[in-house]
Image (cartoon, rainbow, N blue to C red; front, side, top):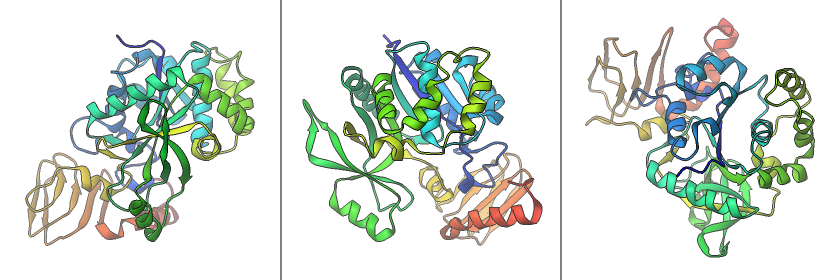
Length: 364
């Protein structure tokens, strides 16, 4: 039977700019069917957590401009479960806001926090690990994160170092965290992999409401106290005006930097469940199906000749002929066509800047 104290906070406020031109300000990555399977990333995430938490306990935190998209994509989501932020302030404020919403209805909540736009290929293993973490946080005042066993020296992820000797009593699989570190350069990433005690930071957390609120109070009181002041307003008609005010005085800070790097009761579960943050075109290429020539194609009418190892995303009915391309990203998104070498995809940020300078925000 599903535990009524299990809650989920899904963070869905990002803009996915590295995924342009498919991901746009008007409809960012989490709302897109990036795999071409008929489900967006946020739909896959929401459905995954419906097996762990009652639907009315799954909260989506997003920017106010995406509220209608959330309602449209997540059928049957209760109105109270869509938490809208008036501005982007990173992960600590959005988690703290959601915590107080949950506190106003259930102080015994046991919570999993996850991004809305990550891909998990082995859902059964993911659910096994999450349930294991929830069982621990229900009983103990600890903050648990899921770290991904790295398969290569990725420079696009933060890393978590754990203690090889120091595990949780009675469970050797749950390791004490020694260090959170930012995205490394390639040489440092190689050293991390060689050492064998570093994991990719997936930004997935499990804790009891009381444990995270204690930690916020201790390590991030300036954020905690802002939201504490609204205790009488949550789930009332005064909530929106209070939050509009609160966000003007709230600094942008991540939960990793604000709490996890400082707290002494942080543990990690080394995990392998087919995770990707699908943060870039190359990351998406790794997880999408490919044909015999290594091409990953979404679009019904794409014909290729002498074309290898490309990632192609087209409107489903558009007839497209590609000849002689190798290692390219080819994306047709409404009113934008981008053709870019796969090994130079970091230039997408530069393209975005130039587009804004030359045409304004219309194409962002």
